[in-house]
Amino acid sequence: STKTLSLNTGAQIPQVGLGTWQSKDNDAYKSVLAALKAGYKHIDTAAIYRNEDQVGQAIKDSGVPREEIFVTTKLWSTQHHEPAKALDESLQRLGLDYVDLYLIHWPARLDTNYIKDGDILSVPTKADGSRAVDVTNWNFIKTWELMQELPKTGKTKAIGVSNFSINNLKDLLASPGNKLTPAANQVEIHPLLPQNELINFCKSKKIMIEAYSPLGSTDAPLLKEPTILKIAKKNNVQPGHVVISWHAQRGYVVLPKSVNPDRIETNRKIFTLSNEDFEAINNISKEKGEKRVVNPNWSPFEAFK
Ligand code: A2P
Image (tube, rainbow, N blue to C red; front, side, top):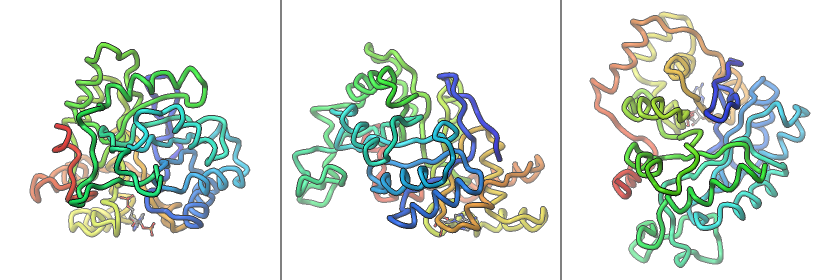
């Protein structure tokens, strides 16, 4: 699909983008190159993925003009107090002058006092193994105030958030220092976690929703759902097409991850689901219950209400 959607900044964002979480080293390079060759115009990365250098190299080597590609990266949680510096570091690794979208990766700041070996791109943990979340000295309202300075530098065209709940967004929008509405909120969405309330809230505020782990992440568990398999068979398409088409039909950005050139190519083909098939997929989570598949043992929404 070459379809684009409008951000609240007026910019266009290609609806299907390549996700790169867990794409390491040469895999990240090869997948981004394969995606750009297959016609993708949208690549999603993050500082913590530790593949920005590979992503940037692939963008350069693809020969696709920079201005034709929508690039997103994310502020890691140990750098909430210094987004300008963190963005500079990301641009340096990417070898780019600007990104199109810069997101706060998680609403929580991680406590820099627990960083080991000076490794800022890590998940600092406490002695008991829990994540060293800093909720006493910092909050995302402060991060957002600093983020708001970035678009005027030209180093990012737009700013947004990721993994923010409705309550998080309400707090952010109501804060006295808030001048810009986030352009996007990137969250886990798939048929087992449809996030209908969050999607409706973001729509009402003109915040673009972006779905990560749209196939259910590692091993793509959603592609084994009997309902999905039945619909795929009936329409003579791949299960991946069914799930990604369901996302697209819901009107937001979808970011399937793959390092396999064939799957990369097929993942951007979408078709129109019948009302009946669309509703059958909506019913999966009603029948089976809603379930996060990413970080199941650590819910940011519990930690940050
Ligand atoms: P691979 O990178 O080897 O293709 P998500 O987008 O939900 O994060 O899902 C990504 C997972 O699904 C990865 O494990 C990826 O593996 C796999 N995957 C991606 N596209 C497809 C597809 N069309 N069919 C089957 N598996 C897929």
